[in-house]
Image 1 (cartoon, one colour):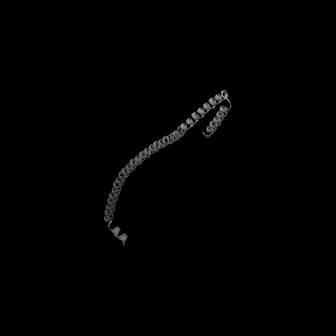
Image 2 (image 1 turned 45 degrees about the vertical axis):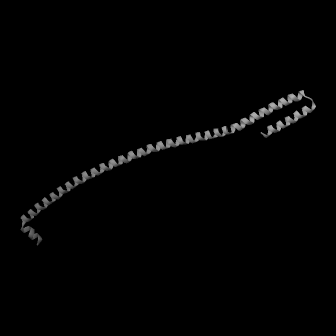
Image 3 (image 1 turned 180 degrees about the horizontal axis):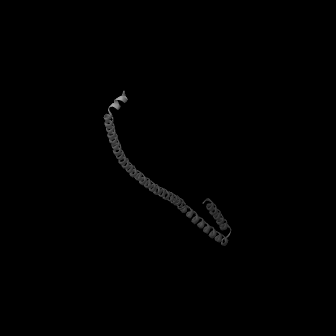
Length: 146
């Protein structure tokens, strides 16, 4: 029956075909318009993402630059630490220097006294020589105690 209906009214079929053709043409045009809109929208999104990636790349470069500066500063701090340790060692030596200097001066003075006592002992007689020998013993003991 459907074939009989379509076969009996060929103009309706032709009109239906023309109507469907127009509808298909409109749908195709709408699809093209939508594709153009989607294309430009995606293009804009890609451009935005590209700018953001460039910003991230710039930030990464800035971070690397800062890391290089931090590394250089750490190296300088390490050098300063070594210099401070060297200064501390030098200060330790300087702090001990007055005691060492005093000891050397005192030893020199005692050696000088011992030499003078020996010279006097050679020129004096028995009792004086014994007393000067005792003085020399005392001076030697003092020298050992320093």
